[in-house]
Image 1 (cartoon, rainbow, N blue to C red):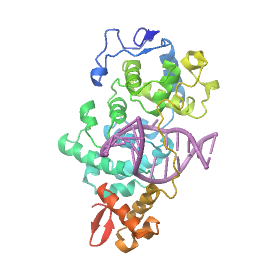
Image 2 (cartoon, chains in turn cyan, red, blue):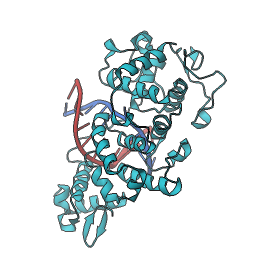
Image 3 (cartoon, chains in turn cyan, purple, brown):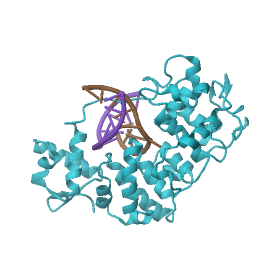
Image 4 (cartoon, rainbow, N blue to C red):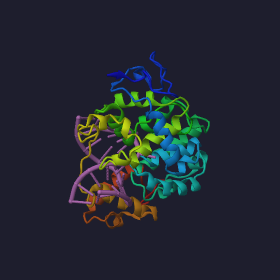
Length: 321
DNA sequence: AATGCGGGGAT
DNA sequence: ATCCCAGCATT
């Protein structure tokens, strides 16, 4: 077994003495895994250079736009976020325009993306950036993590994709690729993060993590991986082991499959979408939410208010002004 | 560790 | 039908 950082091939920056990494006291913790093939980095970066997905947030390094894209991409496929990203950044081109908008305007622009609380959080984050950070998206992990809706992944994504820092954001793609292709076994959160940070070739934070995500989206997929055409097949730890999928059901996954139609989430979504068209009188809530029970409709409305997604005004429910 | 939170795409 | 998706906050 080897320790990450022994010899990762040309372009790698990690020294055995423990480079100062950006994510706190776990930074120098060695992750013990199978040896990393020295060619992995070059092969993956070469493949990325030739096969990169053309996604709109890859055409900018504007930290505000990167932040918007990363919030949109939380639990949302890149292909769908791409459409909304163009419209949203056209409507709100700068962090100050977003901060100056109403929650209602932002929620309306969020239509179709789901997880509407993300829009409220992004709006609050924009105001925080303007008021507490002089309009500049923070450039360090701690300040980014303090923004609403920004967690371990999103904070590092901003650092890597906007500021070019050598940190490794771990999303579902990266976690799966690292478990399979590099470690050859399931990794817990801390291990995956440590490994992801350690693997970033010096000065290539943007391209490297983009490449890992593309590999996860195009070849190393969750459902049916396309190993035959995978660019890193020859260095893949899972391939060499020939064993069970290291990213299998017991790994990171924690989904609870419940039917969506008829769920509270469905009706919440219907109600918010109705509010996008304008205020809804209390008597019309049930119809707007597509429920028959008025008590249930009132409960849904109450929760929307509690979540900052709606407010009462003269007997009507509306998006927050 | 579990749960709530949307909606659409892929198989 | 079911799984999955560039996750986060709360309990």
